[in-house]
Length: 430
Ligand SMILES: [Zn+2]
Image (cartoon, rainbow, N blue to C red; front, side):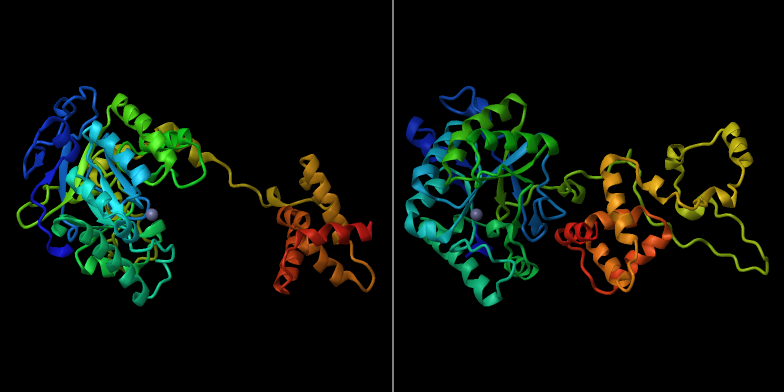
């Protein structure tokens, strides 16, 4: 069963065939570095194995969740969804093996049922295998438990059935289309299954070129500096992009991390909670916080003292970050005159001047002014119609309080703004 799986060792299938090297990955054993990749001295390799406990960190991937894998700067986890599909999955597998890269695959039950050998190849090559539902419905966000439960279980059943040793199945699940829902997540978590989102996709399921997939993968990784990359091993464009992605990762100094689930025999890699955040707060970054309730002193005084910095939780080590006003600044501030009331008064007839700040605005203004001219017996209706025009709405927003009030009154009568009717109503009037 998935919750009690004991994954002790995995075997590198291709390496085994090619060189007779018995690629056993055991607890505490060093992962394959580039130098350890037989026949491929320039391989990217896998820099380390990260053991995670799904119960401690049940939801990962900053595309959707607060936490993600505790990766160090320039560490990357490769994930592939929707396989296995022999035509493309085998090519992806070969590329990863040639580079001694270990990845995580999220299998669709239907694919495992049709191609069980593909699942066995992944396990034999030492990759981590999780699941991705039975039929890949993109409705997990609105499915009742009677629907999503068999979807999740079907994927697990058929994927583990394809394995020689079903205990090799990792308790990792990625929701199809990342259509998350709390009920689904809670169900998975209650079974000790870790919900995997991602830190960035490369859009390889869209109709884009393989070059675009490569660019997006690198750009988005560079933007975050580390993380879980979401790819699909059933796409021709992914197969075409992967060699370039791998070469570029190597050139830019990225390192591959292989993730495996903790088992009774294999404890989780020790981490601290902040390592599970993409950008943990550091000592040098001031943290915004709500001030605590000040220490009130109840007196009969009619005036209250200004709050001290200490009342606002200002810590002494952060105080140097607060701007200090020089004596000169203080003096200048204390001598500024209070603005006179008439500073804010708008002279009669200046509305058009205020509005006519640009050509397009001038046009909008003309329409608005026309719309604002009440006609005998039709004043209200005209205003209501005018309120429907986008131009008029823009004008209202910038106009004097009188116009704004009119706009509000038309809106409050439930007349929606419909730009298409504006032009005609103004034309008729013109
Ligand atoms: Zn998928």
